[in-house]
Length: 131
Image 1 (cartoon, rainbow, N blue to C red):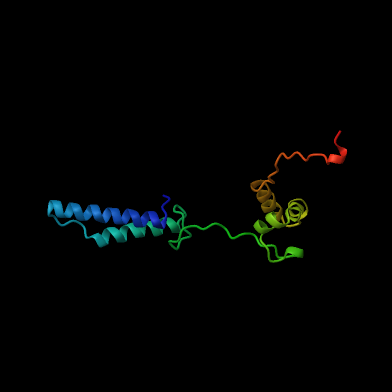
Image 2 (cartoon, rainbow, N blue to C red):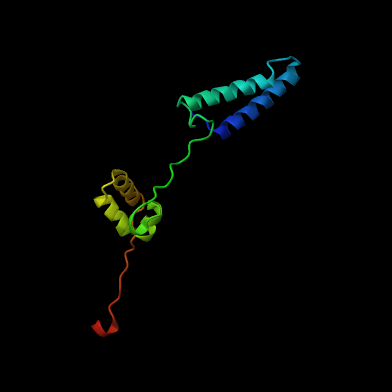
């Protein structure tokens, strides 16, 4: 089961609306709405805790991992994402030479994900060299 907190909210709202319509049309008393809400939330929390949902076990949606921060050298305090844009050669160096495997792996991933864009440009010869 993979349900986000937002999807759970929408499903509950829709269920309650349908529940109330049926109750009004049929003029019958069904299970109280509060019990349906409690059951749905309980299922969501259980799925989040046992790893079948997409939460960390606290009901929150799973977030992207934090960007990898360089904590050494001339770019100390910068993220690898920043460095790909401002000093690509340093990220290349990390990908090839870093003693820390996670820096090598993440640097390689970022370099592949952010290829250098080049244009096919023709530079004309200066007039002095044209024949």
